[in-house]
Image 1 (cartoon, rainbow, N blue to C red):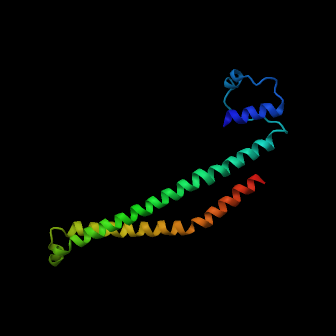
Image 2: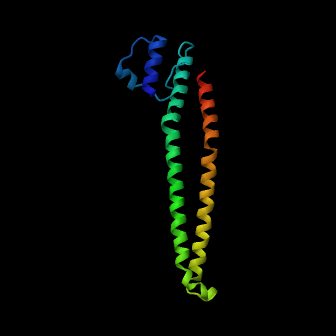
Image 3: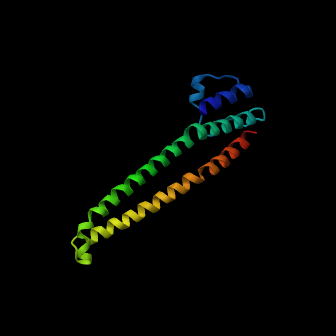
Length: 143
């Protein structure tokens, strides 16, 4: 990306040579030289790149990760609920049961998994609002 912007700025600003060896020897720093003719075009290109990255990489990856976390939370709740139910024969002993501590730990883990699932569902419900705000911010940078 840096090389493309550098080549673009060299062509627009009227640099004397665009030799590939000369491009590789440039010191690290800003990819675009400061000139009045090329700054708006480079800024527009960078803003378009940010919008494209958001629409086709960042947002779909976020959606996929969120869906996977919700699926994992659902599966965790199912497993923990089955484990709590498996302790049912030992409940008649109350605190004197050999599995009482393990059952309490499993109940706490089940409660934590339910809270995590509720949090993920709230994030999923609020996602369209944040997506619209991000789109508005990124498209405003293009205009």
